[in-house]
Image 1 (cartoon, rainbow, N blue to C red):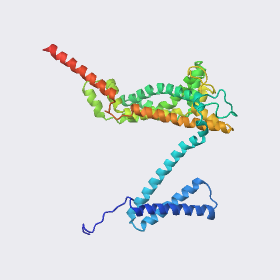
Image 2: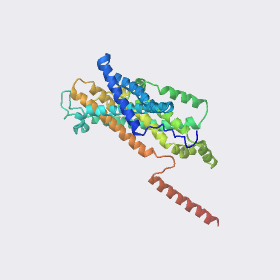
Image 3: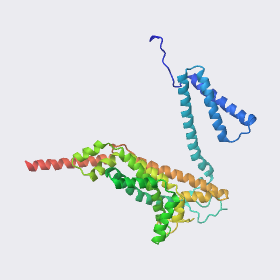
Image 4: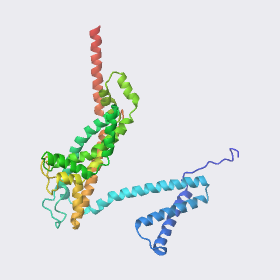
Length: 378
């Protein structure tokens, strides 16, 4: 075959015929599945309908494409259909998870008192115009702040140790951290309860709950930070050491700034694990319907625990408050993640305006010092 007779093979869909093929296969699959569920077989359920319709759609789509294309194009289009459909299912699941609590809790979210009051004066039979989740929001923020204050320095220090210090003890620490990632949350709560409340005599409080949450967050932060720091190029360390910097200075000024974006992700992963815990908070902080802004004394509740207690109530008003609390928790997590990503998510080498000004002032001071030394030497 000559060059003039060759025709470029197009495997990516983009023509009108391709869109009509996808739409026709989808409509035929839905119609066939509806016929099977309604007339031919005693099937039922949304999930079963979706799975059968998806399988039929893939078969019909491959059949329609094979009428006009070769085998290679058919396989490519079929794989593309599988990938896009699975992505659509995942996106639909995410939207459902986010939208369901908002829809169920919109009656509670529409009242301002839901964000400014606690449940001290509201009972199961009281209307949604009374009571709120302010006490749970304050408890969650204080407990996660305590957990981050414990986890971030310990987790990052341990990750740096695992990468910068080699040896048998480092391997032992890594093995223990791997084992702690599968630690049940109830065990972490019981450990803190036995160590702080029973052994040391502390009362149930937000501080104890924050310590229990930190036990759950610590192995996640260490393992994620360990992987991120391991990806830092070795020539950066070698260049720093060659210029006379010590190992501690190299880790502080070279390794950690280079891996800053990944370390932020590691901290966010640990925060996502800890902010949704309920059993450690219940064991170590107890339960209360009152606002307690002091994390050192008295029982304190969190948003996940408040959500669990409210949605298990038989009263519709309490269930609406529970779903509203879940929506507030998702919003709180989103705000925390956005702030953390803005603060620490810049790529390596990209400085903020303040950092650029500080670097300029430091360079000017170094120039004056060098000029002074040269002047005194002459």
